[in-house]
Image (cartoon, rainbow, N blue to C red; front, side, top):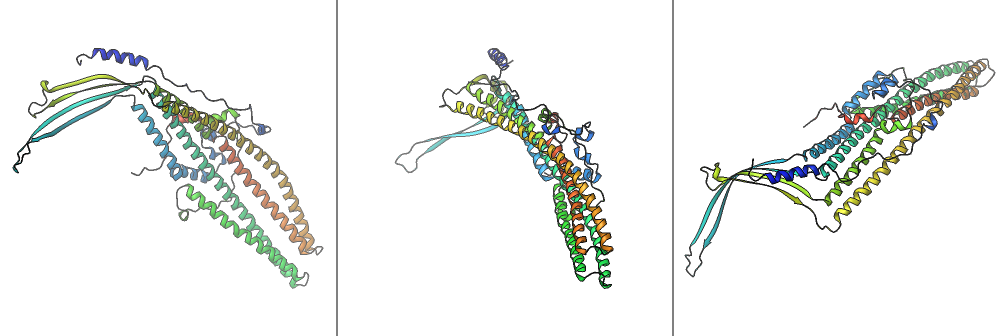
Length: 488
């Protein structure tokens, strides 16, 4: 034991006893306005939560293998996601640094110092004499310094950094969910466009047959030439609509390529004769949204971090205690440098406290308290926005469902009307202008029903995302993973 160390052991024991306390308020989750159930959930189809939703792989509800592969590529290669993951690693490094503050720091010093002091006399003689002395000093030492967390400043700092880490993890989850939802919506829109293209191509073939029939009737003198021009106009107009879909599809294809991290020129999504079916989405109670939406979890963790910062700033009112010890060997000669006569040591506590700062500490405490109030308000607003989004998409899906039922009836009526008018035209009872009008109405109803189908699919994606996409706040304790290769 170092001589005369017993008084300092007593100081250390007292400091450790004091360090059990921590200044500043302990965290409690702020109260938020909520209700027992969503207003628009009445009449919603009750389903057991799907395994894909519970596991976070919510896109598998659509039962499309190509979509599943694209989402996996997004999870591995999206650059915005990689950026969010890097921010998470920064926050994780801050927590490691905060934990390191609890341990003593140990330093070593080995050096040789050469110093000199000159002396001389200056007279009238130009040959003034001068003399100097030069000395060397050899030093080898170890030093230990330890700041004791008497008032909980370091613990509050760790608490705040840990909350910020969890907020960063939730931000990463929110970014991933948003990008996944964007990809799924683009993919579903593209598949609906493919269906629209198939409808228009089939319609073009039907109009080509009508044009051929009309031309034959004109040659036979049964119908006027105006019928031929009307049939040709309708055909070319529909062909133009089909061509326009190519541009829209290409845009969606390019957007998907960027989301999965590849140049658009190197990505091609083949057409398939299938549009994913609308899944049944289980809807939870509003209170579950607090744990299932990553943006809400992130806002709540920032409240926690702001609360901890109050304690950090309040700790500045109290003195800091640092225990330090050092020892080693110091000699003016290299021979026998490391020997008992050249040994030295020092040990002792040091208290440091600000006695007057003109109100700086108070100002920082007030800033921390105001920042806490700001984060609480932001958290509550985020919760309210989350409730609003779920209500919006619930009513949107319900309205689209009713609208689709009526639109289907309108389409069936239009098809029957088209069948009747075509028979009447072949029998010579009506002119071709009547046929064109009914054909246009039938095609418009077909396309409207397909558009509604696409809108319902998009709304289902938005509802799933608004419900958190199967994510759970317990995942904040797990380290988010990215499958991207790290380049150094």
